Image 1 (cartoon, rainbow, N blue to C red):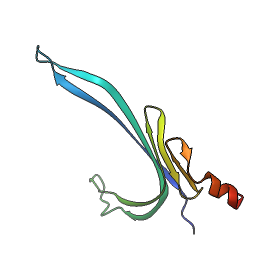
Image 2 (image 1 turned 60 degrees about the vertical axis):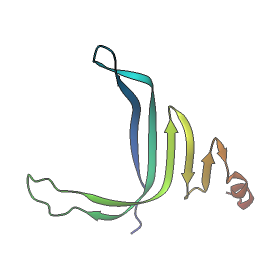
Image 3 (image 1 turned 180 degrees about the vertical axis):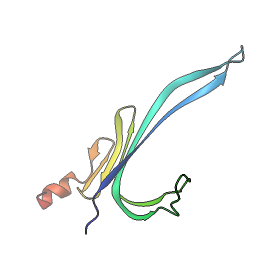
Image 4 (image 1 turned 45 degrees about the vertical axis):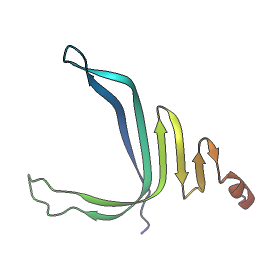
Length: 103
């Protein structure tokens, strides 16, 4: 049985908190929103000892074959091994190779 490709998305917003003269915290600067999307296949799953009502650590191993990083809506890079794409700075570096192979 062939494992099905799964995708995982991680979102992070970065900003700075500073103490002002009145002693309260304020956001300083612009917030930056990063979104990472990873795709691949889970090769190892370990559920530990399952017990009713207990905390059970879950360990997964993901063999990544797709990775995309977006900052505030702009795609920084996208690498897709299965589709033969490597887009960095808006330039698909493998487009000519795919065209030469007829894909």
